[in-house]
Length: 482
Image (spheres, rainbow, N blue to C red):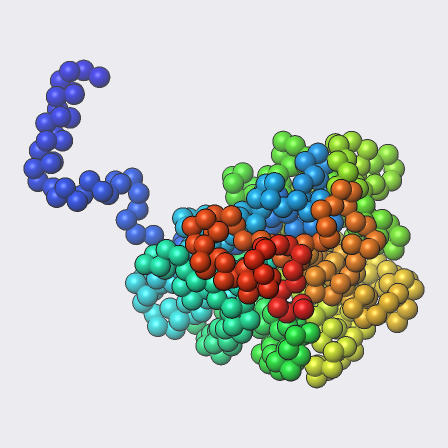
């Protein structure tokens, strides 16, 4: 740079310093001073979808825990050694932590900004309620993973060490928030439009999503509080839940930029740290499941899964299908198949839902098969097999529904893990315990070690409430499963 140019810049800087407030130095001239609420909402929506679809065992080891997948070389999570890569902290931080990568902080920022940049009252209200629905979804992940969690004081910068609210109290408040959203959404008004990647601002579809999420949360408490669960299930059905795969809540990824592609694709670009687990592969093969070629590829003319916890290496095992590894493959937050399995369960529990358990079961299986690319004729053939048909499949209704829900959740690791915890099937501890497993299938995540160090009083109270002692362990059932 020429000396004359340097002198000009120096003079310009000195002149500016005389005419501008020193406070202006805190502003980054390349950064937006305000961010539109639609962008904040989309950021929260994507962060939530990334968390659901994520493969990083340091945050989201759920497919490995549920044995849809297993690890090839680094097998800590397959052996239930969750502190090695600190996934309890990783999952906590994806949902809670400050910054643009956090789900809840992005959504909270959107709710703060919506009243300032959406002037139409009806549109503004819809936007606030839809954002709140996604907050409910995120908090349900937290409370059903850890137990007691920060809630009433969470995300408050004036309270750096928030208390942990009682899990049951949080849960019932989440159901109440869904009630408010369902009754408050105005299907005649707009919301976020194209900034909403899931439903493109369609308020009618968001209302269905809220009702179906209410159905899902209600069924989680079916054993601990059947009266409330039954009431909430009926309310959800009356409000209008999903009726086909076209209602599925799918966040569709974009292949034009790697960071906007599906996390599964990103994980497999360079290396193959995971393989299909033997339990799911063997089950699909034994039952002549039409989803099999849509999920996995053959190895030497056969479908071969890896043994959980064994360290399977990178060869002699089936690979994932091109469909599953498509960079635009969507994250599935909630779908029609799940809603049908939940209704089958509701019928079996006597929750006053019309229809038959077999009918809903068949709908759920067919919806999952269609979603992965096989047709309804293939689904009918599959369902006609004695091992699959509701009337003749082995075991209780929990076993029948549990196995099929697990298969349908092949790409929804957290839900697969939760379904196993809730219904008890497939009973991995009995039929396919991992090699070198540290105890049995984790029933919850421990709290992050940073919480014990930075928020010890509230952490200790939460541990006492959840586990009944001073030990923060993964073996303790949560309140709805005791």
